[in-house]
Length: 227
Length: 303
Image (cartoon, rainbow over all chains, first blue to last red):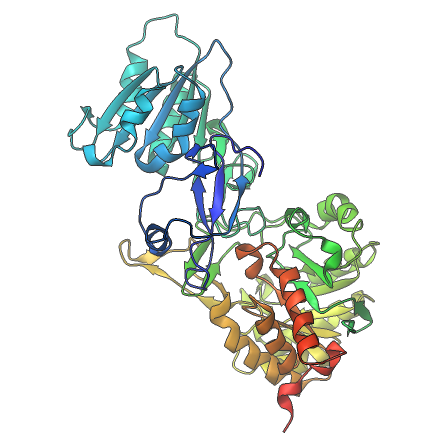
């Protein structure tokens, strides 16, 4: 297996039978000495089956697939935005950035903030927000990012934004990045059948027309996306 | 063991081919299997001009199947010829180009252009797409229109011409006879079945296009029945497809009357599905002491 890079994903079999039929796409969460870990939220038939799987079970996996988060140059400051389960995709990137990343991490409630303590070890700073205010600031991370950037005094450092989360969050983050003229990279999600570029099911609209999330993505420069 | 089959004048080294729209232009699968081991590669449907396709969501999974509404997104015939044919020519397999048009004139122009290209061994007509001239009805559901479009394309090409039938008709045998009489050399049976999934939270269809084509194991019994009926109705070869996941499924189609089988949705689940199915067919032939694949064809009709 080629070395997986943060932002890439795997297609993982959920059943040997025909229902569910398709493999599921999961982001690389972490690399380990023995392989890779994924982090997922149980939200359907496939993840229900995965949850009940015994240790040592064998599953077909294809990957790593897709594009990765491009590393910022040494003089840039990476701002990493994680919305909800989007943490699964950016976690290893924060780890790779080894103390350089400023993380904006938002979730619905305190209980939905996964891996927060683990991330503290290799993030420069973490700003938490929750919808209900049960941890960190009450509100969305988009608000948090926006107020952070608006309160800066010039000269503005050389920032790069990286984000993964719900579609609406990515859209708002892209707008914020455009306003502040910060290059930004976002990880898009769409229903996927094959994960290898054949079915044309997982497209998003970009300046080049409908473009495959699995092949040209999942990480896109946000100015490419037509929202 | 003889695996060779004939689709009109086209000889395939074995009966396992790919279903259009599930195999791209072959490139994505080349890192998973040797394309030369396939009977033929049937490429994603092409039109004269590139087509953008439908907005997402384009696919939704269903019980033992999936619905797709890709909207025939493709790079157009010229770019295909320039960029994809050179790649496909490096493999020892037959290249069958699936194509469609918005009008009979477009079908004819596409067939003529494709026929002039070295490295294309056969054409497969998709007649399950809307006819703009006739108020968006489907070419493949009206026998009169089917006759017209197939006859016109027949005159435009000398390549083996396969017509892919829509299952969304009352009598598939009738449509099969119509296509055969209009000059088809072979028939692909079946295209996807039109379906819909509704999101009960948003109370709207899940696909942006509202409806989509159902494929996968869920449709297999319908497809086998249709191949069985078409085999009885016409003398030309039938390519069976619809939910083939394993060799056993493929063999059912052969027994129903198919000369060759196309693997579709299974490619999405397992990129090596085609060659695993071919291996399984050979194992079955060995077990059953069948020396020639052609002896299986239509065996279910006996007695």
